[in-house]
Amino acid sequence: MKKCTKCGSPITEKSVIYWKCLECGKVFHVNLAKLKNLQAQKKEKPGQMLLKCPGCGHGMDNGSEKMASKCVSCGSVMNGNLEYFTAEETAPVTNMQNQTESIQCKHCGKEISRESEFCTYCGKSVKVTAVECCSACGMKLASDARFCSNCGKEIGVETEKNRKKTQRSVKKFSGKKIGIGLAAIVLLVIVGCAGVKILPRFLITPEELMALGDYEKAYHKAESEQKDDILIENLIITICKDIKEIMKDPSSFELRDVWYEADGERRIVLSVFGKNGFGGMTGQLYVYNFYEGEYIQFTSISDLDIEEYSEYDDLDESLKKLANNLAREQILEICGESNELSEHVLERINTLSQEGLFKEVELLEEVIQIYPSETDDDIVI
Image: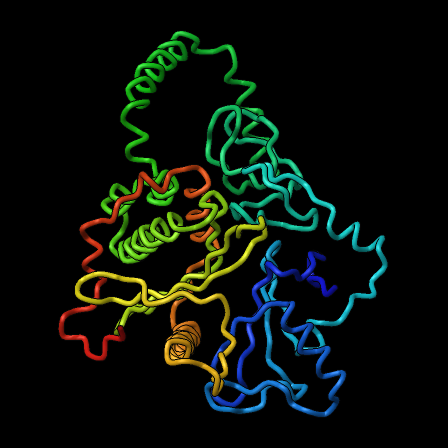
């Protein structure tokens, strides 16, 4: 099984693999099982091209395939061809055990690779390096600390000479001006009690508000350049709420990817996974188009394989295949040319779902600001 060259995590069925046509540039979303099946067929028919791009008809499996996959553990991107992604690893087991040994992030508690310098879930540094002393109280601190855990002072860059001088000053000051010190403590307690109610309202960030499901407060607190991103995320969550309600097991909802158009038709594609009737995880691609003042579901399909027409198909079957193939063309077009929702936003949406906070999220009235205008042409329905 192929593994990530950075952290050693295996490429599995959960991995998202992209295959780009070298002729027309269209990007296809494929899974590992289909790649292995195609490689097995090519071994039986060496020298033949078995896969053509549905967009331009160009042969895609000629040995120079352009494929990429992002590691679900560390985010590292791997590039290669069909043979690369289906090849078996030959690295010794002992090396893999060292690579995949995990530790807990000291900030969020989630398991990550021991080799990681930053947590793949919260993005904070997990490396503990040499210690230094706080310039205010002399307490020893980790070098990556931003504030002293003893007195709360923000940590700056100091020379060894200044540090020793500060420590001498702290010792000299000890025991003097006790009355002033006590008065200062009383004042700090009074100010602190008042600040308990006042400061949180000023210190909480839009990201923290969104993590609580409060998109209305996050929108009004955000800077102007952040507001559109908050509205897009708010719109996507309201769409996810509708999708989750019709799933066989809503508790298994997992949003894997989102592509959206920032202008023009404003179409949205969501890749959603969940458990089927047999308990296995399956994926579905949902296409939403803007029509008559709102986003409505155009279609949903399970894969991007073009369906072949048969002379035995009745009218209903032919129309169904036609609709699905048109949807596949739309999805490939949107995924290849649109914006993709970032990993940390996907993580935040999935966390809101798992914690039962979807019900706290309401569609903001301001979302209308990112809707296509009535003068936009060629709205696809």
